[in-house]
Length: 338
Image (cartoon, rainbow, N blue to C red; front, side, top):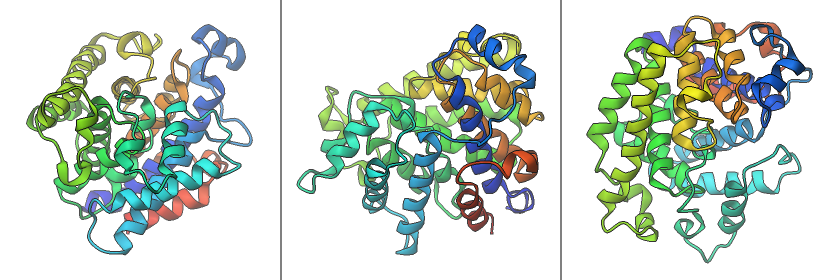
């Protein structure tokens, strides 16, 4: 706990996430050659002015607000669904929701507005898009949660929009990675720790948090539903483990671990960029932003991991002071750092 408080890991995570998002937002949908032509050498990429973020940061803040509201009422439990549902609906209605949001999030949020529907019917059961886990970092930052609460909350916030089991497992792993790094885990140990966590949780379905969500799938049991998601995450962790040892940092990271449009690849490629430069946070962000895939989501996850590892001082003031929603990000981080 002393490590977390000293380095202000929550503030570092949230600011890093938004910086990565802002750096990668202008390069999303571009291949590496186009990015280099537009931005120059990738190691010299600069933050745009103003440092506008995408829906990734907006929805991260929605999850953070939902968590705060739920915990203000007492012990965190499945009632989190209602708090986050309200935040997602407000985001969906907002005129600031004009940052190329994902279709899955938009469809699910429209359905979440229908009071006659249980949230499980709004969930897009076939989608494992990265929208499930690009926003989950706050769950890894809240102090005082049990492992069951943290896993349940991570999977629940994902399931409100993305109901595929791989989306749930990847969100759980993303929150776990943030928590481990904030607590002082060594970057070199991280992939092994995540693999062990996935294996232990492979057949576990958090019914208290997810209700009967799994019955919308074609899986015969809830355990098999979740095992399908964990197995896809274990496979991408194997790819990541190999890439950390063999991939050149000068190459497009998406070639090694995937383009990041889906949840498990966003996790793996975000982690790859961080693990290639664990003590050079800006270089890690630049590598993530100069990628051929979902560059803002990859870079926002890279920034979250780097910020959790190194803390708030990882980010230069001249960057951090320019970020959109900066005051809210810092206020939320300070609450959890305290």
